[in-house]
Amino acid sequence: MTGSGGFQHWAPGDHVLWRYRGNGTGEVHICRPVTVVQDTPELLAVWMAPGTECVRPVLADGTPVHEEPLATRYTAPRTTERARWFGSGVLKLARPGEPWSVWLFWERGWRFRSWYVNLEEPRVRWSGGFDSEDHFLDISVYPDRSWLWRDEDEFAQAQRSGLMGPEQAARVRAAGQRAVERIGEWGAPFADGWEDWRPDPAWKVPELPADWDRTPAHTAP
Image 1 (cartoon, rainbow, N blue to C red):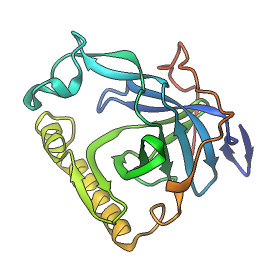
Image 2: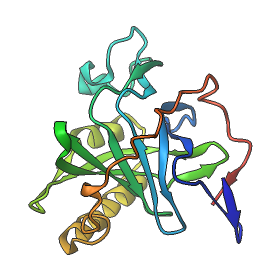
Image 3: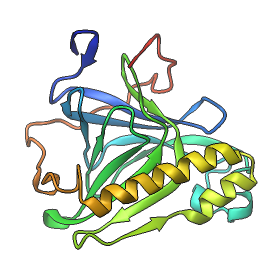
Image 4: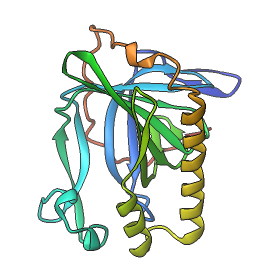
């Protein structure tokens, strides 16, 4: 990692952690080792390769979270487990201070499928990577420029379960509307050609460290 003018950034090929903390708990419950593609004051781009060992939340008995009925999905006891990402790789793009990141998904053979706008807390940079908090509501965007809301039921349930108050929910919805405006304008990153990007074949899959849930010693803007 290098820095100038107070801005610390990683070089292409560096390995960092992209993490999410539980809503209201501050504890890391999602951790994904990724490879830096680009890290500038304007844009962060990282690659999560197929086969990456990640940390994900599960119910206390090991049941996948999405199998729990919606009414108790956010109140049932949870733990975390290590698991491999066996789907196609994911390219994640984020602009500093923006309350969402944009993920690119491909089918086999690098056939581009869609963008995914993940509404989240602006990422906090620390010595080992980036931390955020997921905001439940998401947007899928397709090559024909159509789009649709995702997980509105989970967004509503998170509010009923007390994970998100009315003021925060309003901010998240407003952020989603701004993202929709960006889609309508076909602004960055949708018009930037990232769907044609490919990872360096020499890159190794990052390893999940034993202390993946460590508390950052310090943060940087």
